Amino acid sequence: MARKKRGIETEKPIEPPMTPMIDVIFQLLIFFILTMKFKQEEGKLLSQLPKDKGLASSSVPQPELQEVRIVICCAEADQREFDQHTTNKGRHEANLEHDEQGNIEATKVGHRGKGMHDRPHIVINDVCVAYVEKNPLGRLYKTWVCKDNSHVEEPGLSDKKRAAENRTRYKEIAVKTKELYDLTPSSRDAGKKAPVILDADSAVPYEHIVGIVNACKELGMENVEFVGNARHGVGYGTEDPSQFGTYREQKQRK
Image (cartoon, rainbow, N blue to C red; front, side, top):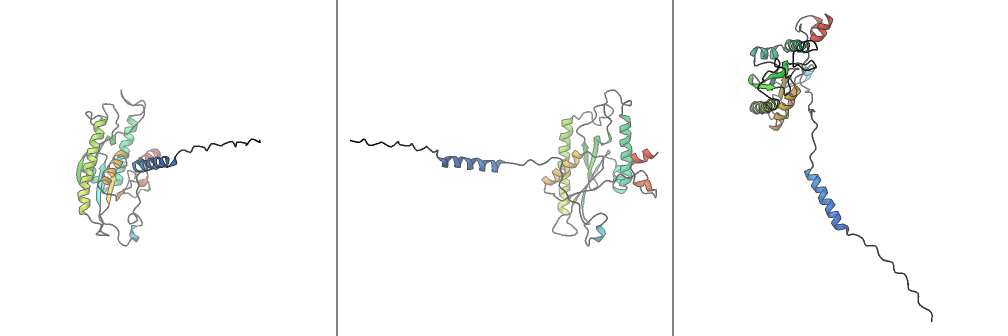
C-alpha cells in the first residue's frame, strides 16, 4: 500500500500590528508641530524704506506729515546737545566723530594708562540719553565698558545692573511713545497711526536700537522707521566741497 506523502506545512510570518504604531507616530508628529517654536534670527531688523520721504518725496501726492519721534543722543542730558542733534545733525555727527577719534588716540598703545585694555576703543557712547519728542526719558548704558577708572561713567553699575536699567528704560520709552502714537493719526489716512521715527546718533550702541524696537513691537507699534546718519564733515553747511567728507578723511588730507 503506497504511503501518502505529507506536504511540508509552511508557517505564516507573524506581522506586528501597524495600527498602534501609526497612532503613536501621528501623536508624536502632532506634539512636535504644536510645541515647535522657530528661533528668530538675532540682529536682524525687518524694515522697509518709506516711499514718501527722501529725495523723491516731492513726487508723492500726499507725503506723511505726522510722526512720533524717538531721539537717542550720545551725550549727557544736555539741552544744547539735543538742540544740535535736531537742528544741525551734520555738525553734531562731525563733533561726535571728532570725539571718537580722540578716544581712539587716547587708548592706543603708548598712550594707555594702567589697567587700560589692549585695543583702542570709543568711550563717548558709554552713556546715551533717550527722548520721546522733546521729553527726556533717562539714560541708557552700554553693557560693556572699559574697566579703567577714568572711563567708567557710572562706577557703581555692574554689567548686569546696566542691562537691567536698559530694559526698564526701553519699556518706559515704548510706553511714552505708545501714548503719543495712539493720539497721532496719519496725515494720509485718518484710520491709521503716524509712524514711529527712531532718530539715533551713529555712535549709539546697536543694543539700544534693538531694545527699543522690540519694546515698541511688544506694544503693537510695528511701523517703526529709521533716520539715516550721513557723517558730514566739520564744515557742513558751508560752500566747501569737503563738507560731506568725514572728519577722518579731512584729517588724512591734512
